[in-house]
View 1 (spheres, rainbow, N blue to C red):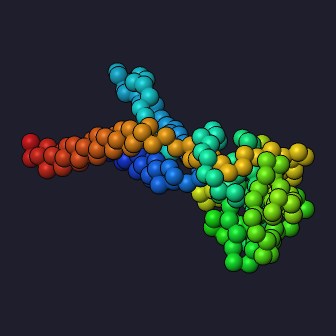
View 2: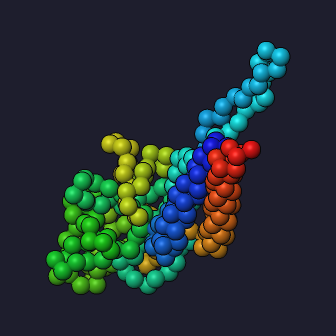
View 3: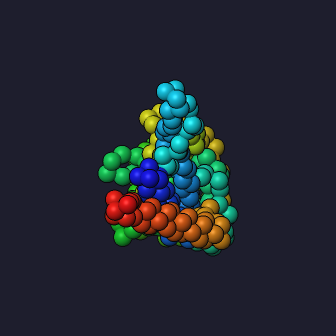
Length: 247
């Protein structure tokens, strides 16, 4: 009976983790360039049950011991492109990323919502400097009419002043760091020789809100079912330890 209690408890743990992942996806449904996480499950090791009949051991069959969360992977399917009319917004082709300077080294993002800080540095919306093709930060000083053209050039009054570092990285080599940054092994990021971007556009999150809400409901129902199983088996254990002993 305890086996069933543990199996139901593992199901509750797995469903709780899945709910957290879906909630994180929904929270970033409006985050430009966000790639949703997709959880997977795996069965815990099963055990073989036997019984003794006339002194012989007879196999009964395998008994599952529950489930647990498996690998959570990132869905790199490209989100829809949306026109913004912002001269510092760009959309990137799938598999292309901007190079970003962080305190822990160069990271990569396909969230093309860029801005200028008070010092004239081109940054992500969270303030991390964007790098040029030479690995330097991009500063436009007091230039006006700053924009980014289809070739990935940062321009001021129509004149190019820097070329964005746009790299190509195999998607299987990327690992998430936060909501919009990715890590990549050294040497896996290759500079795109002739980059092409979509000016004044942004790739939206690839989270399907309706589908995620349906999955959230399914997870809640599954959690409730496992919770009822725990309660039922707890009641049976209580009866077994109190009532059976009286017979």
